[in-house]
Image (cartoon, rainbow, N blue to C red; front, side, top):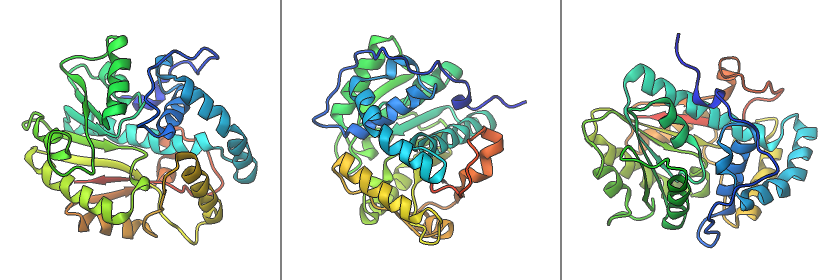
Length: 299
């Protein structure tokens, strides 16, 4: 029988005590700390991943989350957990079924995924990457708890840089080219316009061709005008933009257009996963409306 997805293993929920984690709030969006706190609150991360900034942001968002719960039957955590748990499940399957032994998580933020998967799969090489400020914060956190090793590292990477040591090309070029590899981004793509994303995705597709097998896993929030929660999604979009002080555009109007967009960016095989198809398998909360997020698997 296949092992459970990492996200279903669980850690104790967050307590009132919040560990002190060094924070570089000048160079990192507060949303990274917020989502990190969501994973802690829901038992998907060790308590050491909690931050004061994350706890404050989580408490600040609680009124909006409660309003969402009353209006549509699901709070903010529910929407975020759908993508996180499904990404973990697909990564688990890639490791256990297809022999993947190397994972690169770009824009890793305060995600616990690297620590969780390294605990589960001792032979797995896991590289976390983010902008220099966040990379330093994450590296210090992992180092403090003795989670760094030759097989688990943190690197600086800027997806907008197309050359030099912080480019995606340099990051992937420094990895073991003989290993089957997965590249993960979570909570990243909706912070950029499609023109920027198409350039990034094309560079990613070309740079990953050096591996014997490589797939890219990412979440994406599409613009679904006929979705019953379209208006609510637009309101949420505005809240995120104000919270993050950054644009947060919705991309594509259907699953087919998502797949076409990734193919146009030089990926040959694209599967668009809907969390609704995995609710029973992954124990996701039952929701009276269709999911508003998709997870893309591209090769």
